[in-house]
Image (cartoon, rainbow, N blue to C red):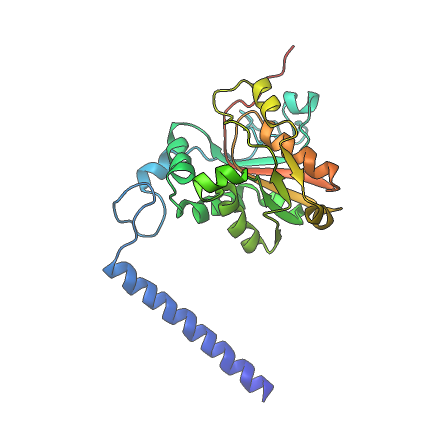
Length: 264
């Protein structure tokens, strides 16, 4: 009986999947999905071909410490990290970015972040599932960079959390949105120097007592939208490590071309 139940269950599930595919096809025919970046219809939800072609996705080889693209593949004996990361490592161990933060990606990210365009969240999560695949394999927990409660109230959502949630779900990892909190209502990082950014977020983040219990001895994958100087991610990583995390890695949607230069 159990064998027959298994056979019928498999057939039923296959029929259900087929039915959903047919239904989705009919729906797309009657109401074609719209591109996230344009009101024009597309074959499937996502970007238009033009917008897609202009995004500079970061492919290996990249620096293992900050995710910066190397200009060329140095081969088997090349260093895994850029000179700046070798000389002055971040508090987070490894980092990956899905794409370069430039004119093409900036508009998409700002539309998501400040324009409340939620369909970008699962799209960016898919980008990160590919770019941060080596980090996801090692991670125990996925956690977003938090917003202060007043900023969350004004924006209505945390863009990092909206990407981190589906990323954790699809990877089968624990998702901890409240383990790390932003205790200080800092001013925007925009327009500040590297030193100004570091000072702005110094001691801004703290791990809650319950969060400390849940992250102790575990490897955390921290999620943010953009890596500029690394000041915010650095402050978050330090707070998580001080609270007992075994290690912290970073995955971002985009990063600027040059986060920092090695001073000689």
